[in-house]
Length: 125
Image (tube, rainbow, N blue to C red; front, side):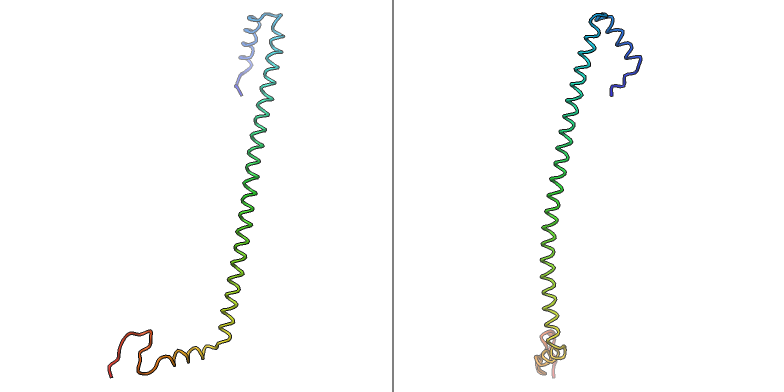
């Protein structure tokens, strides 16, 4: 984490021994060890809380996505039922009126003296 090698630790130990002396050095090492332990525990608890929050956000997002997908599926199914019903009605109408009757009704609507509704050109006799 700090990238401290053996020689650096040895230099720090020698300086601490010179500054604190042999009587107070063990007490100072214990105090430093206690503070390092407290810092580690607090960092671990903070990291766990953050991971828990991130995981909770992901779960909420997944639940929301699943509910949206379920709603979309319901809408798709209802639209598909409507389309199927309309297709059945179209098929029923197509089966009930044969194509020959349809041609006869369009032919009877066009009289010989009148142009058909689809063409706008006039013929001279």
